[in-house]
Image (cartoon, rainbow, N blue to C red; front, side, top):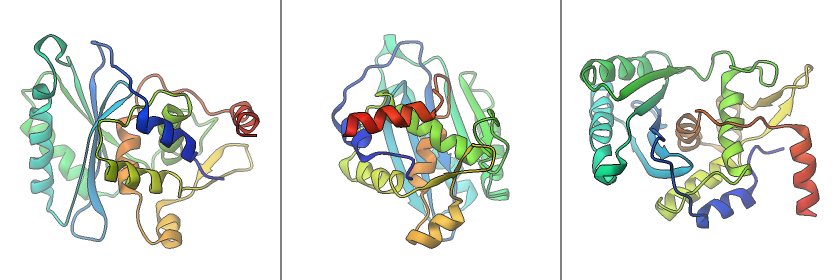
Length: 230
């Protein structure tokens, strides 16, 4: 009843993928402020995770400044003939003014950066495919997991400790079905109550991978997976 399988994560630890030249850099940001939760940034290009950073107890302007530094430093990570034409930043605004304040500041500071697009994503909002998911949070989790399930994820460039953190959060989250047969991921509040922490790292990952090419998670896939595992 968990969204992720540890086998997918173990495979992604050693799988080496390459991105296509036209792939944008995509950055997911889960914003916290002065509480127990962390602000986390996850960056990827294609199926390759390139950066994972977390920090705690910082104000909105400090967080915005750190993200600006990451965005403006993207070019240094690639060869001149492989520079991304677009940098997409998705920020969770479901927490209210905290995420929205960061979005507003980034749009102000980066307004002249033509290749940068800032998107505000509310995990509490409606799913893009409501026939499969009752809310955006569930959709985010299953879209993120689809990259691991389908062999489209390379974590080899990340620090092993960051991979361990992601793995522990990926495999902690459970799901169930609603009366319409849609898959529902447990709420962040319920998860935090059950395991004593918030899945901030996984949430940032999900935002980074919430882009094109996501494949739907179907019951037939689960049946095939069970056959392989046995």
